[in-house]
Length: 246
Length: 246
DNA sequence: CGAGCGTTTGAAATCGGTCAACAGCAGTGG
DNA sequence: CCACTGCTGTTGACCGATTTCAAACGCTCG
Image 1 (tube, each protein chain N blue to C red):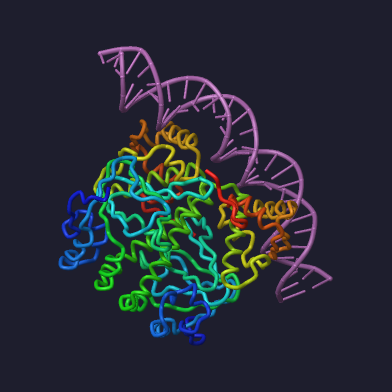
Image 2: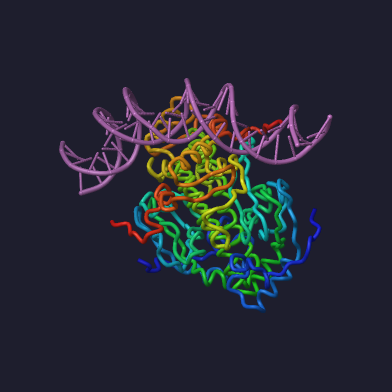
């Protein structure tokens, strides 16, 4: 399970611009290589770590997509995030020393193993690494707050539109097609993440398609009217530089 | 505004057990004193910092209660948290260099100003401080995930019951009465935080009172049937040691 | 090609939202 | 000290978005 699949180097990783090496010079990111020396391959549907398990590492997604879910004592669970290459997973675990969520691969994936005590140790020596580490944690917090807004203040339609646009932006950043992509997650995962039922997700996809906003065929999504999606999402004038008057 | 109200010392602060000094020895927490040298008094209703403002510090609540709210471009806002003494505010701001939320005092309050570059610098020298700093950020992330569950998977009734129990636990930790307290926030704040309308909050309080779970008079709350609240909250057997069979 | 899961669609039920009126308490000023 | 005013909270009636229940459809994989 934890067999090192192959060695990886942060210093040459194409995902460095999203991940821990941001802001480090060549010499510094070479020192990161020693931390991320192990990779784990996680097959579709396999678990990377489980809620309640002891923590020793955070993971950087290198390839593929994973989801994290948090479960309540009564068994109810919810997807707390979808993770694309370059994103760090397991940051919520440091507090209690146990993983606060379970992580499962949505497709065959690879992650770098970064032992937390080594990361802590090195980030004491490299202020740039410390800064980026803190930035990543902080971003997770502030993106969480945005998700509060989504779950608490938006209608189902808006939540789904925002979700699609957010995915699209993240794909675009990574050089993938932003207007046409395959969803790696099921309707159930989407519904769970967005706090709605699977039937609602399905109906909304149909409605979006009927309105000419997107084409949807199973998990393949193609944006037709991106600006329309932005409007639905309540994102005023994100595409054309329209300012919101006050 | 930023006038130092009076000096404070982490090394002698009663809130040290919740705040940054956790895990530090006397000599180490004495070094923290230099960081938290300034206090700010924030009057009820006054703003501590505003979403979008430049970041230079995080704040530790010393006295009182504050709320943080995040706003969307279209003006919709939601309360993202209530902060009791010993809790750190502003951790969501480090990522972008701008505050991702606005913080307002719910009663006359005092906070310690902790400049982030000084905190970063000192935590490079004190592994114990670094560990606690990371724990606090990580806890914010994992508590956020729990709030996802609340907003996305719970009914209004459960959300409010959980909210009351969570507040109670936090008061208890700090040595305040856990079964009888004054809410510092309005119904509107509660509703915003829990993703429901003010009328729903009000009706639920009335229903809880009618069911004999609590006594509510304006903002004063008294728990009558705590176990009943736990059941409503979906927290199986938190009080009596009942295990959930599988 | 069939089994089984994931997805879509329809109809009915419901929780919570919206609109509206009222009540209670606090602060102000006469 | 009390009336006035305004804000916060409560309650009722109605409405609508989303859930729930149910059934059919269509991929995908063995």
